[in-house]
Length: 338
Image 1 (tube, helix red, strand yellow):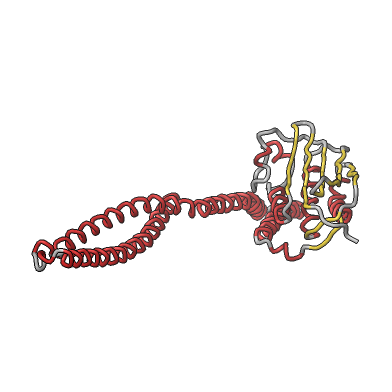
Image 2: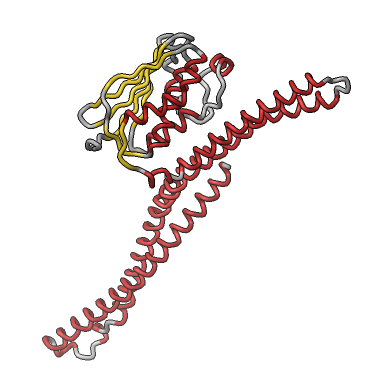
């Protein structure tokens, strides 16, 4: 890949340099003809004045302007040659810089795409391998009874469900990357978003005997209802996953001078400072222990970040290891919804 972008940089530099060279040569041709004409007219005018003021020099070979015109033309040509050489050297340096600057974001996007494809392949390979192995074991065991076959089918169903969840998450990322969600923006109330999100995670919270409390005002918002609900569900889902049973998760809504704030606060295991810069990376899992104790593919916060970006909002996480995590969504304030 590096070689490919080096070649692309070279080709783009050559194209830039070719364009500059063509413009420079055309400009030099025009300047040369203009300068030679001016020199010819100047020499002719000077000779004419001498003939008028000093008739003795009429028809004198000393005042023939042909030699001076040739010398002057060669001098102009030489100056224009070195001018073009200087322009091409500077243009070559500038063209390479512009080519690298033009291709750098494309190269970065290409690397992200390659890494993303590799991560997806890796994440899909694990449940596929498990599904294949359990099926092969069940088929090879000729003495397997109905219960064993049922267990194998249940295991396969679990792996298929995991792949379905991953594919659905990837489809959400694709739709969010396309910014299609912005077409459905409209006025909203934070109370409706919070209630809908709490309803979706209620079973998960009940399974761990956790409580979700709310506080604050009902804030006017502007955005896509489904996307903002999904954003809050992701934050609540993470808070529940990484919190101990019988603990609580708090949702707070408030405003500052310019923004409406949606805050989700848990009292779980938290994260170390070195983890926080990477939590929005796709497929990132904080550590092996978190990956083993909770299910997921590390896509939730990536989706949440894209949703907040599409709403011109900011999503920030603060956390202390062993003391919980606070997620804050800061949305531009909107006029009160009637």
